[in-house]
Every structure is written in structure tokens, then in C-alpha cells.
Length: 137
Image (cartoon, rainbow, N blue to C red):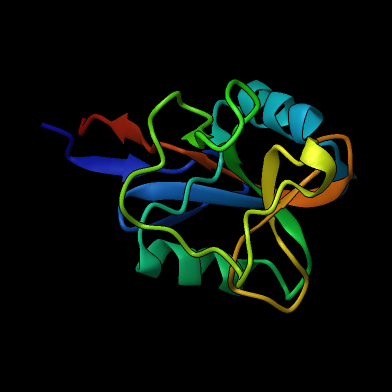
């Protein structure tokens, strides 16, 4: 049992998961690597509440989330390797994989819905990590 849990420095806890906004623009792969170096993953909004929370953190700017179809076109998966699942928040007409090379997912600026984009474009991003368990003395 975990008497108390805390987030890594710079992260905010929300419903048992820690989130951190990175205001530097990076490609999807570089953003994912930065999250990994920080002990986490790109944020994965698997439900409407988490989706809305991440949008509230974004400052109405475009940012990557941890969703892609790089392995198989049209088969989206989260960066932890799990399938997309039932919840989605696609913008109308998305995903469209324009020209067949849009494999990574982001929130466009001012939007609370998802869009697919080229993975080498650069956006801000949000990482998620699990809180550390602190033992009571």
C-alpha cells in the first residue's frame, strides 16, 4: 500500500497520473524521447475527462499526444503499445493521412479534437508519468 504519492518535479497530478507541459517544439519522436528521458511517455487521453484536462493544460496551442499509426496505416496505437480503444476525439474528417504520410496525432491550436500530422512536424507536447510512492516514516 502506498501511504502517499508524489509526482516528479514539474508535473501536476490529475486522477492518479502526473502530467507535464513542455513548451519547446519537437518532432513526435524527439518529444517521445524527451518524455522517456523524463521518466514518462507522451500523454495518452483515453477518455473525455483526460482529453479535456490536457486541452486545459495546452494553453490553446498545438501539441502532440502519444497516439500514432506508424506501424500500420489506419491502425492507431498509444505509445505504450496498447490499441486506441473505444474513445476517440477526432476532428471532423480526421484522420485523413493526407498524401499517406500523416502518422502521428496532435491537438491543433484552439481545438479539443485530434488530427493526424507528419511525424517530423514540430509541436509542443505533454508527457505523463506515474506518481512515485512515498513510504511513511
